[in-house]
Image 1 (cartoon, rainbow, N blue to C red):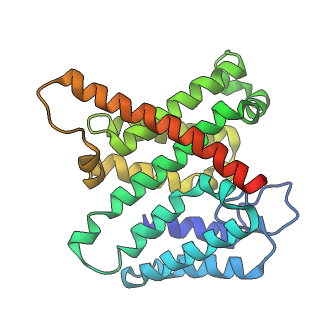
Image 2 (image 1 turned 90 degrees about the vertical axis):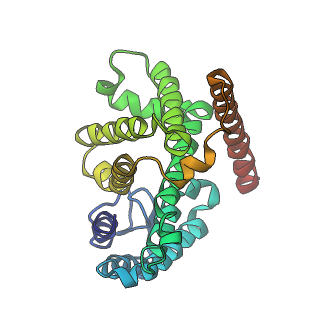
Amino acid sequence: MRVAVGAFFLCLWDKGAVVPWSQSDGAILTPELVSGAPWINTVQFAIAAALLWRRTCPLAAVGIVIVYAAGVADYGLFHLTDYLFFLGIAGYLALTGPRFPSLERWRVPLLCASLSASLMWTAIEKFLYPQWTVSVLIVHPNITAGLAPQVVTVIAGFVEFTLAFFISAGRGLLRVGAIILLSIFAVAVPEFGHLDAVGHFTIIAILGIVGLHGVSALQERLRPAHSNSALLDAGTTVAIYLGLLTSFMISYYQLQAIQYR
């Protein structure tokens, strides 16, 4: 994880990934979010440098939080909710420096929860604002498999939300969800180019870690209460899924209304 995050922030510092339509030379956290503030690049280089030593990983975590806060200041919390997984990475790094086994066991759960929330949030966008995804599919028709872009958008939204749910609450399907999502992000790189590769590099790294690690303390905590009825366990899981789907839709509209009122 340290290698992946360090390489990612070096790419941002070296201006190796900025959207081509930007008039800025720097990016905040992702190629999509640009900034003209020179100190952003300095902090992003400092983050990469701090990851060289385990003991300074908490400093890298502080740097990520600072850059994330700068992104919120420039673009608003609504937009930065797409990138909650960076806060999960910050939490992972903060718990990497000090050697406390009771705390270290929560590093992977932080990655799972934050990435799951980010992917669920972007999945909701496909339901509420399908035109954003449709416009991309029209430009890249190869990934539609001959289906109408509107149909692919709805399917992609449910698939992404479901797989993200497995990352948080799944046990037997945890690794399956991580592998499928990792494959989707990896296959998209040749189609969308180096900006996509850099922008999704940390996500791919997290999915790799989740797949290798398997069930963590998070999945144990979210496991339905033990019962002798498989039907009851399945019903509990479905209820949690539908509750999250509804909650994310309501939260999306509410946060958008607050920011743009």
